[in-house]
Image (cartoon, rainbow, N blue to C red):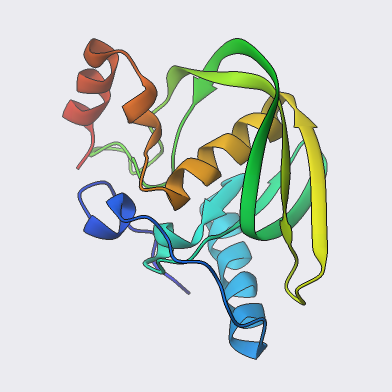
Length: 162
């Protein structure tokens, strides 16, 4: 099983490259990502989190699961929603469990991209799924949720991380 990279690993700060081959290797990667996400009790996982600098994420939140390759994110409802958010790549030093903080996100989004076979996909989301999409999309640009927190809150999280 693929190991989830933790904050401090340079791959998490490196923007992902577009996926160019929709082949057996991509399908295997998606399956491995889903396996790693479920093993860690996550609701989403981006390829950089397992050390693969590609623009791809998987998700299972709000009763919907899937994956998006080369996603584009469109904000449908820019109303800011503050809610608890954590990250598999930002575990507590003592617990190994994600550290949570109230993180601002847009209320509604649409993600467009492709599935494992290169077919177009489009998913509209609100609530947890919208938060998940924004969080995973950030990973593809080398952004971690702590970057969106006020400095004091980010510092508190980072002091408890590895």
